[in-house]
Amino acid sequence: MKNDRFHEIGEILEEKADLYNRLTFIEDDPISIPHLFVKKEDIEISGLLTAIISWGQRKTLIRNAREMVKRMDDAPHDFILDHSEKELTRFNDFVHRTFNRNDCKFFIGRLGEIYRQQQSLESMFSSAEGTVYHSIVNFRKIMLDADVPVGSSKHLADPSTGSAAKRINMFLRWMVRKDQRKIDFGIWNSISSAQLMIPLDVHSGGVARKLGILIRKQDDWRAVEELTEFLRKLDPVDPVKFDYALFGMGVNEKLSR
Image 1: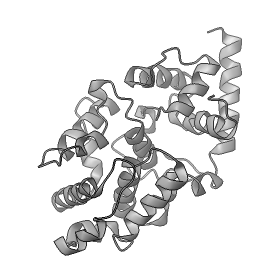
Image 2: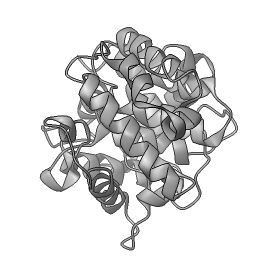
Image 3: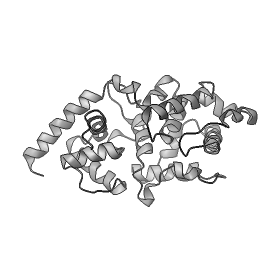
Image 4: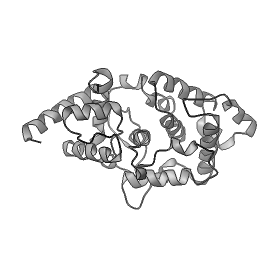
């Protein structure tokens, strides 16, 4: 890419990131659910469960995520640690697309087991290799090191099979990324913002291809690497701030179509 075009794209993405990385973004985004809480563990748990079901129509998924934490008495950390089998029956009629009651009960129970052993989800994403790729693979391995109901494993993407892992990359952005706007929480320190990978979906991928900064046609892990590599050239310290630009342009300006 020629320098003039590179700088032009950089200016566009900086402008759009500034435009969409604002508090008004929260209301209509799944990140609104963890923003209901102030306790670190509640933010982590509600954030992860919300990210896991974050596909489909946004209003529907936000409503269903809100219902999920409401059924945990709006105290996710306390609920996953102390719930009874009878209290789990609250989720018997819970469903979001292909995420059903068995999936919901599994993730609540598994998170309870994990939090009884450690204080934060953060350590699950630690990886000796020091890359987000390995962090996600490590997290998935730990989460599924249990008696998993049929079909529940599909709700945790696996980049080792080529998945873009959009929802987990989005969750990591929420937990890791720090700036003064405070849309993302920045409550984890073992992963840096510089290590984060772009949460690639049809919107961000479509805009990136129209801008000529993503060549690969499939929205897979190789495309995540390709796009993130370009964004790191624009900002090596905080490349995924441009997720706001790409997603915002795709959804609000319809540039992904």
